[in-house]
Image (cartoon, rainbow, N blue to C red):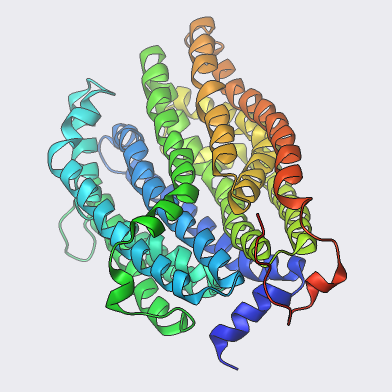
Length: 477
């Protein structure tokens, strides 16, 4: 039996709790390491000999567009992941091959769009958030390179999801870890000008980032063509297919919008908080990167939940779907409880890693302690969104994202900035996040009830469905 066939058999028959851990833990590790190098980036930049805090602010202004690049790339990968997993679960290898090759074509289109933005749109984007000439200059320099060399993160995101969809998450993890380590090693060398190299400052941070992304892409590309042998390759599959692209984005577009809303939220918060106090922007930017260390772990598990439930849906197995939902929520809750304890206990040391003024550091500590309360609710929302996407509930997943990141965030944050007094009770703005996540989690529960009635209950309960030799269900809808 080939390794590819063995992986497919595991997706079909391995106990869901063990399968989710075996697939999820490597992704979680790689996602947390990715979040770590975002923190390390900021730590090195903040400790520059001159203008460290301004450089941190510059990275915060550039961050929403970086997230948008990742959102479009990962969302496309999520759509391809779910469609490929479902096709493999249903035994349709022809459609699986077309899905993989069309995802590569879409990656090329995405890169061209952000290349053009890097050439012509960065100045206007950065200037809309700040009038400080030093910060604008640093942010423009950093983001221009990240956009023009974005092919690394775009294509890595696509190949990462293709590897995960077939159960080869260990390979995507190796690729991501390699790029992250490369970035971390290059950061001090290029930022501070070590080993005789010129001191590049913020531009050095950008250069380290894109080189790491290119390495991750190169490895993921090699791994895909080496281990995904159960997916056919050929020029006939590479030809753009309107039908396949439509199916990819019927699943992936809500995921793109969902993640893009993070960019919109951060961009909006930068403007709202920047008008109140520039220190709020810096403090939130740092907290956002710290919280990613926890949230990215939940995102890593999400990337195991979706293909497992989607594959089970394709083969028509109600029991495996229900197990995927149960263990997905349980494991996500455990991650979030651990994250909450870490951030509450180590709030001051975490903020102390960065070279901040006294006021900004105090704001960062209050952000860590208050916003982290939302982890429990955020974890439930993230797991529900993965479940919704796997069960053709892309729109429902999008609704939760809009609630979490727009409807219950920007208006509430604006209201709190109007109520606060600069230098005294600025911390009240941080309560925006627990409020938004709690309400969104309650809405998710109601949506899950509807998804259950539509997509899970109609499936047969017969034990025969669990026979791994049985033919996949003809219609899991």
